[in-house]
Amino acid sequence: MFGIGLPELLLILVLGLLVLGPQRLPEVARTIGRLYGQLRRASEEFQRTIRQDLEALDRQEDINRNKAVADELRERFAGLEGVQSTIKEPDVHG
Image: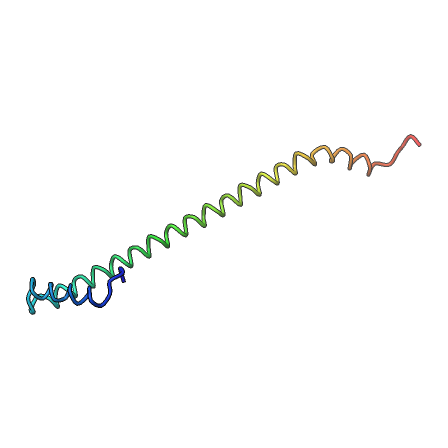
């Protein structure tokens, strides 16, 4: 937790008790805890959004790569259509 050990935590609590007093310290601690929880949830949501966006970009890159391969194959085999029809047609001169 932020690299804070037990001695540091005790020092923070004692200082908080001296500055805020025993009545306000629990209220401030609850508020800080609530804010920390909200910050953590917002951070997790942000990370989840970033992961989803990266996954969507990866999928789009895969789609674009597959389209490029398909276009290249169409270009390479476009000339074979004439060969295929020549092979299927019987030789009427022979």
